[in-house]
Amino acid sequence: MQKQPITKYGRQKLSEELYNLKMVERPETVEEIDIARSHGDLKENAEYHAAREKLRFIEGRLAELGTLFDNSQEVDPSLFPHDSIRFGSTVTMTDVDSEEEFTYTIVGTYESNPDKGLISNQTPLAKVLMGKEEGDEVSLNGKTFEIDDVCYKEIKFD
Image: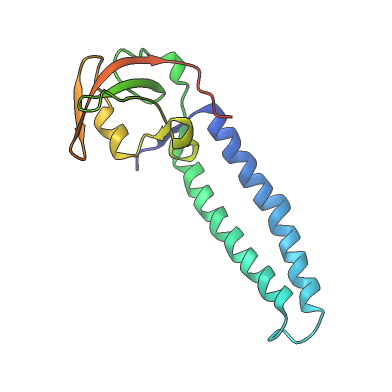
């Protein structure tokens, strides 16, 4: 399986979330379960059932993030030329029909935030953009876009 790129920032945030879940959230929730269990009848113990559900969520999230961490590779996009679109590129493009302009930066799945213009390299849009250059046209979902600019800009996650 090919490792997915992630920035240093994304890898650090992923590590912090994993650490928090393993070392803080999970132990606290196990303790909540023990306390709720000591209150007696588990059939009607809402605290117990809520804590068990929380632990199931934490365990699921740990598995998901662990897989993501294991299958990712830290990449510094500032080290690459951005004459064509690649991981870390900031792309400005125009819808050829509406002339509306869009700017996106291609990041890893864990780092994506479409509201901030950060799109995952796994999205259909990023996949059609990869390898394209300024002046190229791409089509997606019946819309055609002209690529106006491709460059590297420091990525603002916060």
